[in-house]
Structures are given as C-alpha cells and as structure tokens.
Image 1: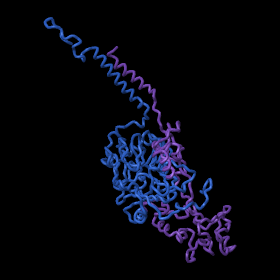
Image 2 (image 1 turned 120 degrees about the vertical axis):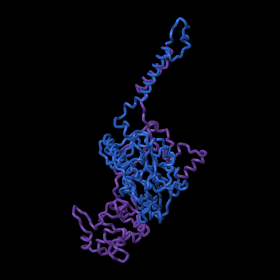
Image 3 (image 1 turned 30 degrees about the vertical axis):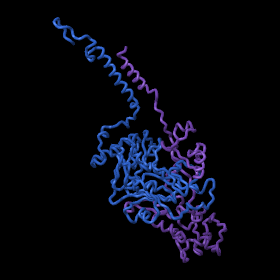
Image 4 (image 1 turned 180 degrees about the vertical axis):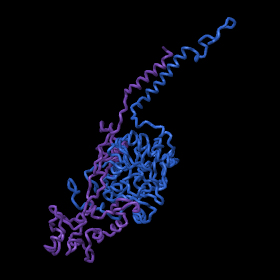
Length: 230
Length: 339
C-alpha cells in the first residue's frame, strides 16, 4: 500500500475538489436599485417664461385682470397675493422693484423701461452683478447640451430655472443613497454582525468633539464616540 | 530487461537497479501522475459553471494592444465586443472608438461653493458608464466636510440626512482628476493604461492584467477594481458604448472615470455635468480661450486637490466670492421640503 500513498491522497483530493463541498460565499451585498430621480437631468423649476396664469384649463395673460382692476398704488411686503406667492427675497420686499408698475406683462429695469418675461436674467442683474457676470461667462448656473457648439446646441439655463424669484435660495433636496461599494459600503459580514465596524467607513464628527474625544482617550477615540455610526 | 547468460553473473539485484525500470515504480508513479492530473482537473472544475458567453475566445487571446491595432483590427474587435454584449445582455450595442479631437484638452471645474451634496452625479455616472451594480462600483465619491476647512481625512462619505445641504457642511465630489503626470500610468507594468492626446487617461480592459498597481498609485482614489463578475441589469445597460470607456468590463480589470469619453469626443457634456442640479460642474476645452473653464481658471479662485504632489490634475475646484451656500436658508424647511 505504501507506494500508492501519493496517488491515493491525490485521488481523495480530486474527489473533494470535484464535489465542491465548500462553495464560495461572496461577501458582496446587492444594493437596492438606484432611484430614477437620482439620474434625472431635469432642472429644479420649470418656469413658462411667459406672463401667463393657468386657471381651469384656460390661460390668462397677467394684464387680462390687472388692466381691468388697475395697479395698486404700492405693494407692501405683507400684501397677500391672490396667486399664493410668498415674497421672501431679503431686503427686496417690494413687488414693483421687479414688476413693471403699469404693464403687468413685463418686468422693469432701473430706468423704468420694460423687460420682457423671457429675459428674466436682466431683472436679476439689477442687483446681482457679480453672479450675473459669472453667469454670462458660464461660471455660474447650469449648461446643458454640447460643450462644442460646432457639434450641437448648447443650452444655458436661466436664473429662474433653478431659483424661485420670490424665494431665491436654492431649495434643499433629497439625497441619493450613500455608497455600498466594496471599499466604502457595509458588506454582508457587517450586515450580519453590525457591531463589527468597517475601518474604511469614516463617519464625520464635529472637530470640537473629535478633539475632546482624542484628549479624553489619549489620541484614540473610543468606538462609542466616533460620531454618527449607524 | 537485463540479459541472462551462463557466462556472466546475473545483473544487480532488484534493490540496486534504477527504480524507473521496476514494475512497482512504474505503476506507483504512473498512478500518482494520473491522480495528480485528475486532482488538477478537479481543482479547475468550477470552470464548468462558467457561462459559455464568458469563455475566452481565441480571437480575444490573439488581440493586439490598442495602439498597435490597424483600423481593420479595431473594426473586428468592436464587432466582437458588440457580438459578446448582444449574446449576454440581448441588447444590440453601438460600440465605437471615437478618436480624440484635434486642438482639444478637456478640463473640469467644480464649484464647491454651490455643490449641495445631493449625489445625483454619482447615479448619472453609474447610469451612463455601465459599471457593476453588485458589487457596486461608483466613480464619484462625494465627501462631506465641515465648513471652514478642507479636512479630507475626516470627511464623511456616508451622510444620509433627509435633505441636503446641511447648514454646517460643504461637499466635495472627487473623481478621476485626469492628471497631466498620472502616477497610475507610470506604474502600469503592461501599458494597459495611458494618457490620450486630449488629456483623458484611459484603460484597455482587454490588456489589463488586474495587478491593481494603479489603484495603489492613484492619490485621488479614483480607480476601481472588478473584484467579482460585474452585474449590470440588461434593461439598465447603456447601448452607446466606446472601446475605451463604457463597454462592459470583466472580472479582474480596473476601470475609472473617462470624462464620459464616448460623449465628450462627440461634443457632448459628461453625464455628471448634465445632471448637476446646481450647475456646480463645468466642463470644456481649456485650449479655447472663450470656453467656460478657461474663464474660470482665469478669473476665479481655484483650488487643486493635493497640489503639492505634482500630478498636475485637469480637475479644478473653484469658489464664489459669496454665494447662497453661505446664507442660512431663508425659507423654513418643512418635513417634506420644497420641491
């Protein structure tokens, strides 16, 4: 039997390997499908850029009513608009700073002349000079389409496609899911045993807290104080 | 066999003969050889579970390096890739190899003052570039940091508040910087990655041996490795493909951001630029003095990540002198927020 020790061992090994008794368990987590809105390139707002009011499937011009009733003498910041507009534009709290005093289908510039509705950036430029300069050169605001205008159209987004002129700060948004990549995400082993902390996952902690934790524990923060561990 | 003769003594006894000639030695060694071969075959047996579409073809084995291919070779290779993709995903792709444009050097600029950290760029990139969904591969990482400092080491990838931006934070998306002196190209032992004339560093996925040196060399952590067979749902596959950018990868190769090479070489914007809701992302030809990026580099305050290591990236962060991100939100933020 002794001379056949090697072949018998190898045959046993072959049998074990062939049977695949220890299948490979992948640590890979299948992440949930990405939400459709996360890759939607639509702008935040969709202004019509026309002095229109849609009521019950009929479209009115602003002037349809406002010529009838006449303009108010001046508009107070607390005036309740019938269109549900809430004006929160900092110190710019007068309607007629932007809207034309007599022609409701236009905006007004610094000299009292009319600015058409489809050129709203000229209204914004009255106060926001540096941003307007950056926007003209493309350093501010969205650009879509083609970087090379010889190969296709380039589309500059106008101010009101991102900013509500009555409440101009860019609105807060939903956030798309955080990464579940092999390096950065929670993996299967960690899903089963949540107490195991992935050292590659760094959770933010305010600088003051981190410094205090490091002082308290001698340069190494204890696990319970390492911030927003989920 | 030893000759037997009356005049000569018999040959040496069995114990002193060469063992190769013995019957016992022959049988035991032969058995060991056969058993060894079968053990090797058994060790390779998981290959029997391989999808027939994934078996390496002779065509692919004999394929030349990208730079040595003639136009006819390239056409054949693109045809082969299209066939393989169709067999696997049942989608007929449009595989092309757009050449770099003359007089074009691509540069990216990102306004950190305006980025709100919504991560839409991450998912637009995933949708465009066909990276693996499980294990998840993403080219863009968005770092959340405290306002007032750039503490990359202490940044957070995993923020998940109901709404962004959080008022005490700023956000810094990081992706491939398309360096002018790319350390990842320098370390590649097989020249599977190189810098194109328009400044994009690309990978030939058919030439990559998966040694991951480039991943270690990259100071921006911009390269990704396919540790497992990439899984892309067929209905999410982007059929607009290029050889050097978003054609499907295989297990064991590196991949990275290519500024959406298949889009930008045809004049379009990268997917991350198109989707950014705030317009923080800017892209263009830096050799054109009228382009947006030229203006930004000329007129704005620009920050280069890890400037001191001398990689000369083609990716710039810039700031506004004063922007809305420095204000508290004027409108109260309700539970659902404003849309």
